[in-house]
Length: 68
Image (cartoon, rainbow, N blue to C red; front, side):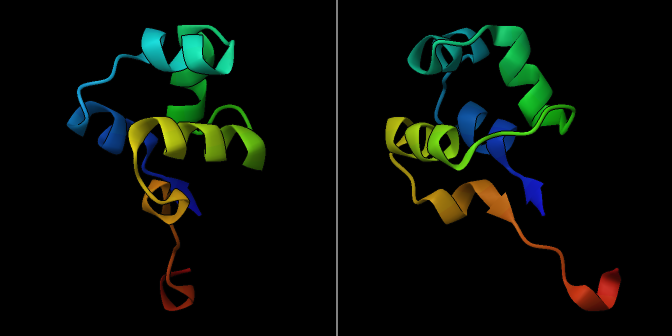
């Protein structure tokens, strides 16, 4: 599984700081989520999806098992 957080966030014109403010986290935390360097909770992923006005599945890219 890979997050498409940065791709969707930038397409919506939202900064890391603004998203961090919504979650009560720093822009550095958002950067870590985007780079896959920190785990993200389902609750935070849901908050992000609602804020960006997208379905939670729009933030997730599932890897094809054949590619693994």
